[in-house]
Image (cartoon, rainbow, N blue to C red; front, side):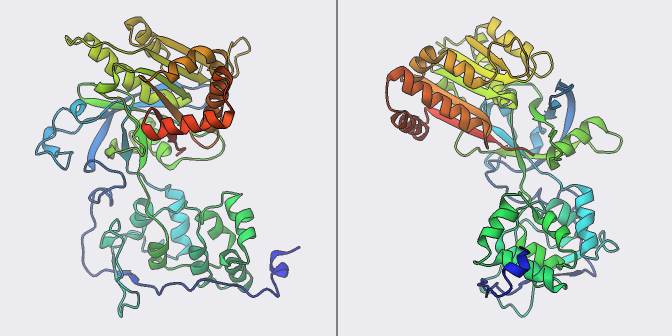
Length: 465
C-alpha cells in the first residue's frame, strides 16, 4: 500500500519545533579564516590544541584483488613553537606526552561533489564562495539561544558545508519536520511529516534507520525541499574529526597511522581525503589538522603495564595500535633500565597472507627481538590456512589463553571493527571461558564485563570512515 494512502486518515502527532534563531546573510565585510574552520575550536575528546602539520611520506600496506587497499602515512610532529598541549609552554618530546595506543583526531572535509549538490539545492552555487555572516536572528524568540561554537561568524556557504556541518548524518525527526516546512510539493511534505511523527515511527525505522539513509539521501528523495542555510546550521550536527590510532612509538620526528579504503561502494570522507593527498600531491596539498584525542574508554599501554601479561587481539587494521605497544616494549627492553616484562600474545587476521597481512615483517621482527612471545594469524581466504578467523585461534588455543587471561597480572586488549566483528570475537572469548572453567556462559559474560569495568579488559571499536 502506498505510504500516503496508508496514513491518509491518520492524524499526526508532531513535536513543536523551537523557533528559528539563526540568520545567514551576505556580509558587507568580514574575514573568513584561511585555515580549517574548526582549527581554532576545542574538539570533542581532545587533549590538545589542533595543529597544522603535513604528511611526510607513505607506503602501501596491502593491495590487490579481493582485499582493501591499506596505507600507512607518516605525519610530521609539530615544531617546538607550536605549543600543542594546552598545559605546556612549549612542545616537548611527544613520546613523553602520549602513550602507545592513543589516537589522533584528523579534521576532515565533506566530499566536494556532495557539498555542491547541497549548494545547488539551496540555490547557493552562485554565491557559494562569497562571505556570509552568521548571527542570532532578531528579535530573539528562542530562550537563551547560542550560535554553535564550531561555526565561525564569517564563512562562505561552500566552506561551511565542507568543514563544519555533517551532511551525512542520519536525519532525526526534528530535522525531517524542519525540512517539511520548506518543501513545496504536498505529497513530499506529507511524507516528511509522517516520518517525523509519532505515528510514523515504524516507517522511520524501516525507511531511514534500516536502509541507513542520511540527510543527502532524504534530500534527493524530496526534490522540492529547499531548506535555507540557517536551518541547516540549526539542525545539522558538527562535522566531527575522525580518530586514528597511532601505529608507532618513539619515532624521532613523526607518528604513523594506518587506514583502509572502503571497497563496498561507499566512500569514506576522511580516507578519501588522505588517499588523495598521498596519491595526487599536485592536486591536493599535504597539510593535515590534527590533535591528540582521548579514547573513551582509555585504550593504551603504559609503563606500569610492562610487567603485565598482555593479550592483544586485532583483526585487520585493528592491529595498528599494537605496533605502538610493541615498539614501546622494544624501546624499553633496549634501554639500560632493568624491567621485567610480562608475556605478550597477538592474535590478528587477514584475507590472504600474501596480500593483506598487515605489518608482517614488523611483527616477525618483534618476535625475534623478544618483545612478542606468541603470534597467531588467521587468513579467511587462504585454502591451506589453519585458522580462518580470529575466533578459530581463540577456540584452538582456549586452554592456554583462558588460563593466561584469568591471571591477575594479565590485560586483554580487543580492537577492530565494532559493528559485527568485535562482538563475535568477544562472544568467542566468553564461550571459551565457559568451556575451560566449566561455568555457565552468562557467568563468563559477567566476569568479562567486570574485567572491562576494572580496566583489565580494554575494548576499542574502530569506525569506518
